[in-house]
Length: 250
Image 1: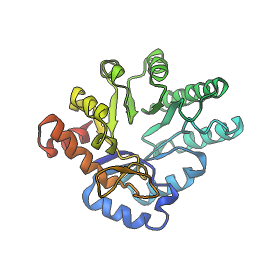
Image 2: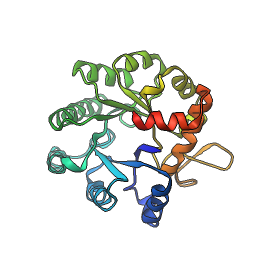
Image 3: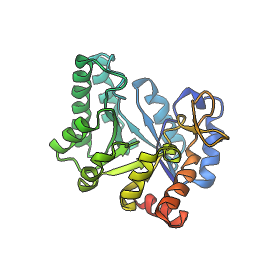
């Protein structure tokens, strides 16, 4: 089992992060934690060095944080370059028109996205993409750069699925699959060879009633990828182990 996208540096884990990772080590092959803000980078790098072979990291700036100054963004990019050997991807980066609805803000998002695309190309690392309410623009930008090593994190735009598949990009699926008809159809129609497991933990935790809850009600954890794998297996009518093995290869 590999969780390809979670956020271990979030304060939600401050009380028991070490214990959580001990549990993950028992049942999981790897956990990829996403550093989405410069303030979390130091802790993220600590987790990678303290848990070799289990915790890996991606890093960028979530598109909602466009109020960061150009100086802070440039400094963070220097830190990313300096820590290239401790990173497996650049992200999550992209566009978010839900959090940022004004045109100037969206333009700034696009500029920052382009900057992180350049960093990914320079460091020869894959991109982890955030594309909330903005998937058409994101896909066009990625295609314009002729990018191939792309993970579409929490992808929900089914009309664009065939373009994503044709581009050879990977789609990561989380616990949203348990309730979303759209994501179920995406899983049904996407080749298993282009699917990855993720949780986006601590968000998207599952309550006792089977519904997704606020992280303040139910904290999600990387181990929840097992439930995602089981649901993919159910939809595709195969054994869960087949899903775990193939998504691990992916």
